[in-house]
Image (tube, rainbow, N blue to C red; front, side):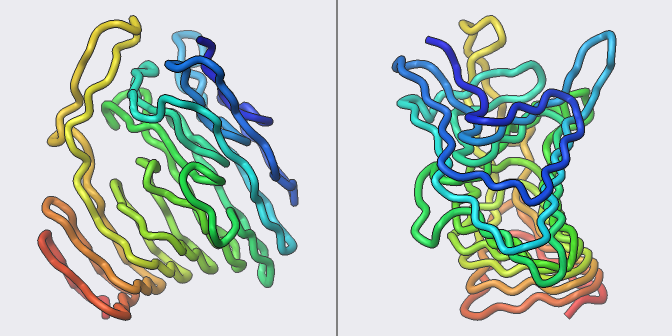
Length: 274
C-alpha cells in the first residue's frame, strides 16, 4: 500500500517559518496493513542528492500568543516495522510532527506566550513528536534537532518516546508532562526544562528493512546513541530521573533538581553545576 507523509505540511529541504499558525485535527491515514504513516500534521526531511548535497529542512514555529495544537494523529496498523530511508531508519510515528534526516524544528516562543502540544490526556500517537534514527551521524543523513528558543513556554503533553533526535533547551521553559524514555542527548544551556518521570535509556538492537524493501538488516545497540543530559546552564527539574547503563548526566553549569528520586546505573559527572 501507499505510505502517507504529512497530513498538511511537507517540508523537503527548505526553511519554513510558521508564524502563529494553528495545527489541529490533521491526520495521516493509510488503509493497507503494511503501509506506513509519518507526521499527522507535518513531515520534514532534508533534500540529499549529488546535485544539491545536503539541504536541511528547517521549521521555525514562531509563536507570539497562547496556542494549543491538538487532535493531530496518524491512523495506521503497522507501527513496529522499521524502514531504511537512505541514511536513517524510521517507523510509523509522529501524530503531530515527524522529523526525518538532517532536520531542525525551532520552537521560538515569545515572552509571555505558551504553545501547548496535545491535550493533557494525549496518549499513543495523538499529537506526538517523533523522528527517524540516523544510521551514521558522521554521514550525510544526520539526526534531527528540536530546539526551544525564546522566553516563552513550550508544553508537550504528548509522548516523545519515538523521538530519536537531539533536544536543545536554550531559553524560556519547556515542560514535558508525560513519562519519557530519552534515547539521545538533551542539552540545556539556558532556560528551564521541567520533566515528569524521565529515563535515560539505551536503544536496543533494531531490525529494519533495507532500501530495496526486502533485505533484513540490524542496527546494533552499540552503534546507536543512549539517553544523555548535558547541562551547561539553566535549570532541569524532574519528578524522577533514571540514568540507565551507557547513559549519562554531564553538568558543567546550571542546576538539576529532583522532586522524588534519582536512580543511577550509568554515569553522572558534576563539574561546576549544582
